[in-house]
Amino acid sequence: MAVVLGVCASLAPGLLPRTPSAQAMVTALLVLVGLGLTGIGRFVLRRTRFGGGDRLARWRWPVAGVGGFGVVCTMVQAGHWQNRLRDAMGVGSIGAAYWVHWALVSALIVGIVVGICRGVRWAGRRLGKLRSAALVAALGVGAQFVMVPTVVEWRRAAYASADAFLDPALVQPVSPTRSGSPGSMAGWTSLGAQGRRFVAGTPEHTVRVYVGLHSAPDLDARVALAVRELERTGGFERKNLVVTVPTGSGWIDSDAAKGLDKRFGGDVSLVGLQYSDAPSWVTFMFGRAAAEESARALFTAVEQRISTMANPPKLYVYGQSLGALGGSAIFADDADEDRRTCATLWAGPPAGDVHHAGATVLANSSDPVVHWSPELLWRPADLTGTRPDAPVPQWLPVLSFLQTSADLLAALNAPAGHGHRYGMDQGTALGSC
Image 1: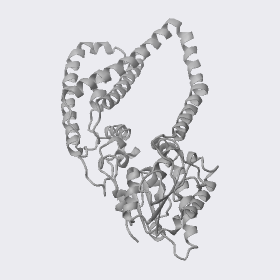
Image 2 (image 1 turned 45 degrees about the vertical axis):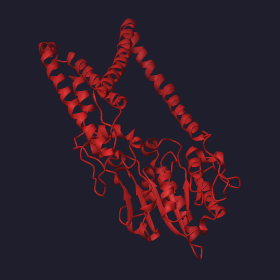
Image 3 (image 1 turned 90 degrees about the horizontal axis):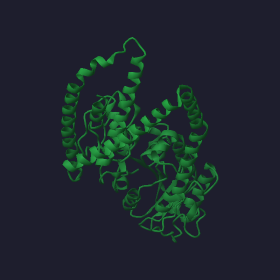
Image 4 (image 1 turned 135 degrees about the horizontal axis):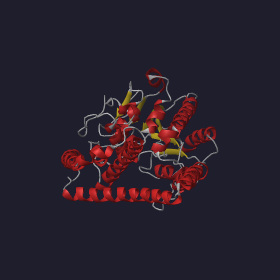
């Protein structure tokens, strides 16, 4: 029964199309959780007066038959829902091959994990209860004092390595209007992987300033360097200046940059400040304050600098995803935002948690980032102001939270204009003073 419930829960409607392998991983995870809970329940029952569950054994096959029928019905419904999403997003429909792939991969994952668990249990029995308890204790201590720090350090090293990777396809800019160029105070290698992509992007006549985590030793120094870079590149001499708040990984969407160039006919400077080299979801969960602090510090410094100018540029703010939350956190409220900027634009804000009055908010109804919040466990997401781009599943307690969480992992793999993928309208839709 645990397997049936796990499979049916994993096939509940989601927001985005899934590959059979992605669906198989979700299914395997929920089946394993169900098996784990069942094992705990049996363990408890055997040690209480409610033991004797073996009396239900005669109902095993009828229950299995009903469960199998339920799984088939759920698969049919899931296939219908997947094809509705795919039709709306221009993706090819699924067929029998999808379900064969899904079943094989799901069974393989569950089989491997269950086999490992049974092997550990067998080894524990062979060692005896005393040795088994000692082994469990030793493993617990080892995990706490050895494995956990090791994994954390490994993760940090992996993020830093990815950020330091020099993509041979990227060409270092030579224009003095770009950070990372030969005359820049923010060196090419210090910008990080996402910063290098940003400053190497086209069109070339837009001023693009970017300061990476390794461009200066601390936040204050990075902010000061960004201001100096704007002065060096002539960024303050353009008619329009956009503070672009990156996502958690330091990414600034190239489509947004192109849209902003088109919006202002090239007479614009874009400035961004990296605050993390971890994936956006990691930064959202554990380092959201860094996004807010970084955005607030950069905007304030730029605002103070242009306040001394006779002909200051018009000031705007743009942010996508965690960058939208960081950008919105600059301001105390909607009135403060309107007073201090010409206009702001937030793309794909998590749970829509941004200042809305006076701001342009782009949010796809199929974007799991817009839906996701712990509150999704007990109530539906507020989709006010989202643009309907695909069918939205009916909210189900707990299940909608699980499905949306799974969709987060592939939010950027959706077709253009769906999920967490936004286009040039991130720039062209920016409002006016």
